[in-house]
Image (cartoon, rainbow, N blue to C red; front, side, top):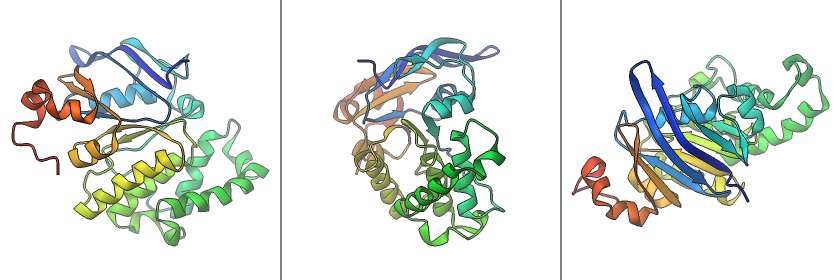
Length: 253
């Protein structure tokens, strides 16, 4: 049975710069799979190739056994991959509800105008409310997204990704810019996405307590290349990871 996601010998170059070099890994259905490494290690570039924002220079990306390498990002979204971004990406002048509805349109293969007049849009409106309540923004659905606190805007970004109903959710530094209590809530939400909604998650994150407390397996990349792959316990004890990234005195608490 094929893995949900398989990345094989993936390389991405920008002119003479190699951002990702020979990266291979696979993700099982229902896993929370982490990718960590120093700034500039190629983590976000790897995400962008998987999500279709960049074409790979070489190597392959497969979803459920189907090669999706180099497909456009909207087609990849329809095939079942959604992503969040490190920075806030919302339509600030529009309400939270309108932001979530815009995300739903990605699944519609016809014109956006046809979507909003379809019976499917009516059915989706109930799901929109359910998603908003699940991520804790149900009480602000009719407020402008740009006026929300930063943490709520980050949650809205997660909600927009969920509205695509992905088989695989890519989360790029969901804890970036959050305070300590918000980071703990983000960790709980990631686990709930898997445990309650059945989502498979690929996570890039620098917050080690969140990573170690959430992930089933972790890939460490350094200078665009794979450095280590294993369980959280194995990664914590790996001398090469400690030397290149974590340091001897890193606090996992």
